[in-house]
Length: 280
Image 1 (cartoon, rainbow, N blue to C red):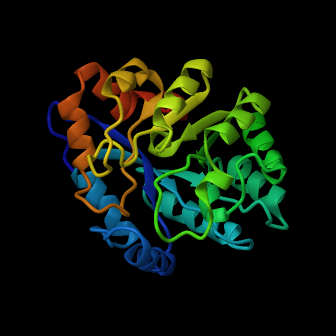
Image 2: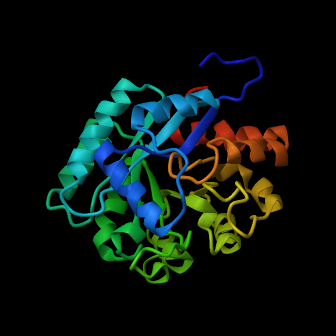
């Protein structure tokens, strides 16, 4: 992609990249339980599509839904990020992996991944379950980033897990109290409890959120734009590509339409550069 004069150098903080067989399994699940995904493309093509709409860097997220997958996924992520320098790698681990500590050391220390992604609703394990504590401690100790799908939403028809039993504000509060130095990013603006998560951001300087899907006008309720502006120093743009039911640039376009240039720049790239430690 040739950068045009005045083009904002977007950092997409929430993109999903999986090996192709896993992608197909995930898309099948979405077809049966959620929405119709518009962008069922292989990982290499997804990079190019994101670049074509102005994304200069993309945070790669994936997750192990059962023990024994993490090492393979992290190895795949390392190879993929080595091939695509626009990709910022995050690792994964399952709390019941027998070699959990080795996996964390390998991806976060040996390979220099920027952080870890955990999806407690997929795992069916509560955010504040002690099984996660060694993982949180390691991330805090290393000064890495935890992108934790610890909010209750989006609420989908398919999962057998009760979101409210494993996730939500009250459980995230436990983690923030126990690990006050943990760099914690909650995706989807904590949808279902967005205003309460905004309140929590006011109290905790290490709590960040990403916008994923909430500024696309896809869900029934639009979050408070005024509160986003007020907390815009710690809110990150994320698309959830490719698993979304609308064009890839929908949310990015709305951010450019709804916010001042200063807030746009914070959401679209300045905040991401800050938390990731990237040079301008």
